[in-house]
Image (tube, rainbow, N blue to C red; front, side):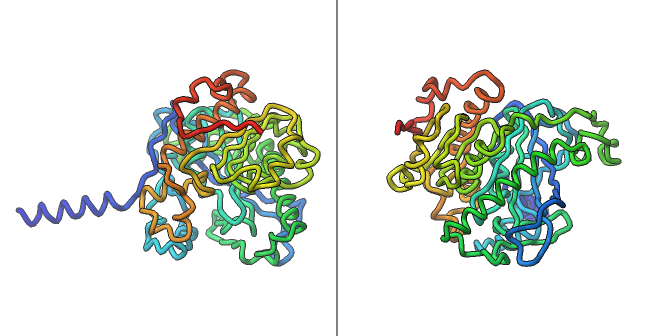
Length: 389
């Protein structure tokens, strides 16, 4: 009997270790997620090694039904990406164990809520922002994370096909300003195409809860909507190079109404020409207008509402989900990513990002709130310093 108890305990322990969970969502909404492949037949891929159309993968995170049945929490990484990352970080299977707090394939409940587009850093992946996107969505937003093929570290398509940044003929050439601008142009067009696609009923009908129900969702008795997403006035933000694309989009496309940059330099025509639209910078303390001359050039040309905050304990990689992974598996296991995470806890930097970004998007997309941007309640975040430049 004792031996059976020991084996049972071991079995339960093994099952418990089968998944490593991201922090519990703090917003009032339960969150669903789904993945879409979006093919731009009108555009040749400018970064691909051979002639092909531009083929994107995006993830959506959105408020779902409060009592959704059969919630299967989505893995952080699909199988091929997890296997690749385990090689990079010597994870020995850990990457496939990391699990988000978003319900895979559950229906979108609030298509009437504003839309936010999120871009990753150059050479990384949208999957490094799934926990961030889920947390923000839990506070009442529809969030879309976008991968950029042959720019993102790896893009895994729904059929399992993998595309690697290293396959691009432009790989390792982004030190050349002209090449960097080529990557920026591809990203801007990608984001515009994603927004175009989310205005198309043939695309939105593939989002659970919109359009026509699948047989699986019929069995869950979901309610279905034919409502359109709000695509004429959206927010855009990103980490690193994703932040640069966000700022450029404010200049290039009037549908992008407000933006934010998470510790990224800025490039493109917007640096000199500027914008009248609201923009927010959140950065590491070591990343300043002195160390980054692109900010020094762009800042005076931001003519609308603007704010800049630094967060103590952060480094460049802190503004991704990497601090969450570090807290789950340890800094040493993350290999080259470990030293980029800073000392701040993953759940804490997530709370700070959600508060600042939520205040920004509340004020300019929901037309209320945003008092944190005026300093009210900022004392609750002693790690945060507002800067005047």
